[in-house]
Length: 494
Image (cartoon, rainbow, N blue to C red; front, side, top):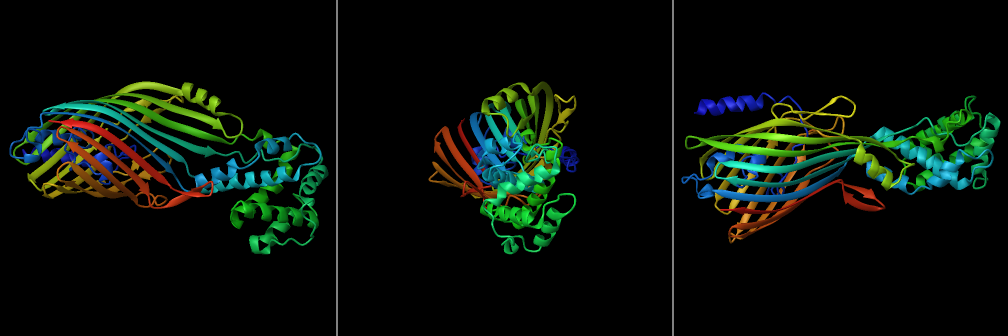
């Protein structure tokens, strides 16, 4: 019996060096307790967190599972994560006048000063995003699941989508002309109206970059005279500083202004810029059939056999040239649909009423789905372990940890969470929950703190939970958490 449990444990842990999609914290009770659930789940959602828990339902000697022959659970939730400084950079881009910028490339003579300023900021933000990377990741889930004794069935909708910039730093020309002198004059004229001083007051902003930038702009490859170069630096310093762009990134922007002269000669103007958002993701419908089986008094094993139907979305959305309606049409047609099967397996150890431990392996067979490119979208195996302590019937402590470093929708961005939380049942009808989790594989998102509550009305239970990151970004001059999640459910257990 114990040999069987040990063999299953080795089987699950054999995948610990593989990678997988993110292990989402599904379930309001679980999210409120920091995303834990491998050992602490006591309802139908054991189907997701650890199917072996089903092996203890109806066990007279384990009071917490006694007489629980039937259960229904309905859940919905979503999470949003902004990696790195992408939100601040997008905010800066959103404030620019794209009509004015796009008209630059169509002008053969004077460039309006405002258009030059916005073009300079645009180049700075594009370069900044190129250097810093980042992405916007959306997780969603919805489910309806039911259990009869140790047998369960459900319908789970799980989605993960990513928007990631793909930048065009070639089409950055400011004016269309075949004459280098004319191109330089057009750019210089755009900044001369607001710059009358020959010596730029930019030393405090550009610091050590100042001499390098002057040399670059007056060099043979660019060709501005000293006065023109100083005026360009004045204008760049003024408006990039107002935009909150650090001097190091401003230096990159001014280099691009110089490069944009050469781009103008070949017709590679900003109005032709193809910078885009690459949108990729998958919507997966899972239909699991779950069974848990006891192994003596203290052990249980469980397995979920799952039918999977997936849509894999892949599209490119130009940043400057399409409206929301165009984007919706692209997303509606740019996907590939296919089906597969998957296997989850779990092991559960419950030697006393106050201690529980478990381990689960998900997608152990690495299911694959078709992509429009002809390649395969794979969900690689993932494993998680957890423990739960119940020193009193109304108080539960739980902790989980991913044993795999899991892939996410964002390339080269991993997820390996460690989580902990507690639940206190006040007077047996109101449950208060708090917790936290941290991604050990990445550093851009700090600790996530969670909280939730549950209302127990005999057979019926309502749960609500949320999670936010402790670090914040800025959007439209307001601070916001870099990651946030919310989950709600209604369940029946009797």
